[in-house]
Amino acid sequence: MNDNMKKYLEVFETMFQVDEAKAKTLNYQDVVAWDSIGHMDLIATLEDTFDIEMETNDIIDFSSFAKGVEILRKYGIDLGE
Image 1 (cartoon, one colour):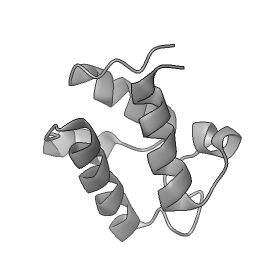
Image 2: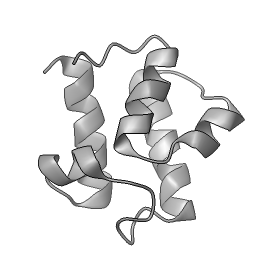
Image 3: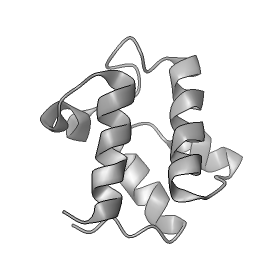
Image 4: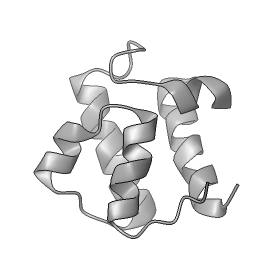
């Protein structure tokens, strides 16, 4: 697992209080904390962590851990795997 994937996982684990296995399968609204406000907090944290600014469509499409990997790759973030 590369450093960027570790950072990505840590954001999910910390923000949503889940373990690594749960983080990797998480979808929007699977946990109470990932509501609309939690979603914007997640996006802001990821933008700060990876020094990017996501487009509105990507923020809306960011519906799961897996989809987030796909979206971050679009911004040149190497998440390995």
